[in-house]
Image 1 (cartoon, rainbow, N blue to C red):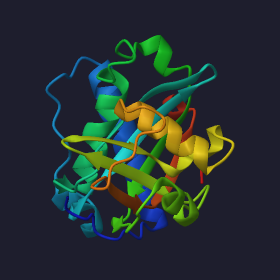
Image 2: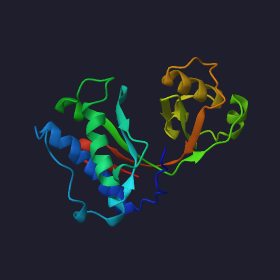
Image 3: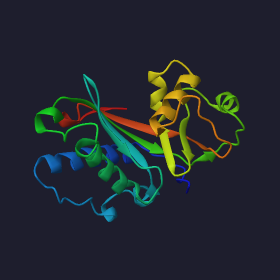
Image 4: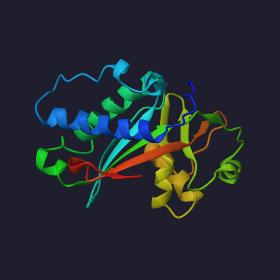
Length: 204
């Protein structure tokens, strides 16, 4: 699994990425199903570098969509654009976002992933000792199946043991599952958010 480049997103780049995510969603809502990402030449040079991201949408009722990528297979700007559209219209847990729902979205958040750190762990207890609650994102991979939790998920769990249990369940494994060849990767994220994106009110 390739590592994403370390990211340091400055204020101007954050603003640009948030605008790109909003634009990507609103173009689809306006019927531009074949709308293409913007020309990289018109964007800050750092956003043309390969990067990976997740985009999530929240409403008063909770999560309304979240999609992303782990490997940096395209320019970060284009990754955010595509993931914004996927979160709004292709998250299999939800119906495609409707215009009325867009006006009810309370927050759009982008998480830009750092590089991966492969953890040398011999047991679940060893992994639990190494995890940094509220800070680490985690990928578990085994025999072609993998799952990840962003650092933001720590807000929803009481401790590292529950974080790990839920991640294994997400991957389709039993809570007590462990394998000697389980691949464990840690990463961090840089987050940026926009409150009430349909009205472009910024939150930093």
